Length: 94
Image (cartoon, rainbow, N blue to C red):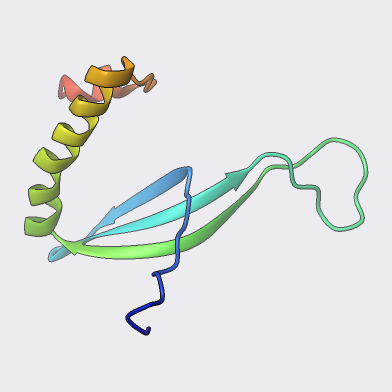
C-alpha cells in the first residue's frame, strides 16, 4: 500500500470471537437481513458474510479494553447512553 492510499474500511455489524491458547481471533461479520437469494421472490432470507478477521494476542486484547471504555464513555458523555442489549448482564460476570 502506498503512503497516499488509505487502508480498506469495513463496517461490520456483528462479530464472532474464538480463543485459542495463545491468541484471540475476531471474525467481523456483515449481517444483511434484506438480501434475497439469486432469483428468489418473496420473504427475505438474512445473509451473514465474514468480511475480515483479526488475530490479537491476549495482551493486546486486554490493553484495548481501557481504550475502548474511555472512547465509549467520552461518546456517551457527549451524546447520551448507547443502547446495548445484554451488556449489563455480561458486565456483571454472571
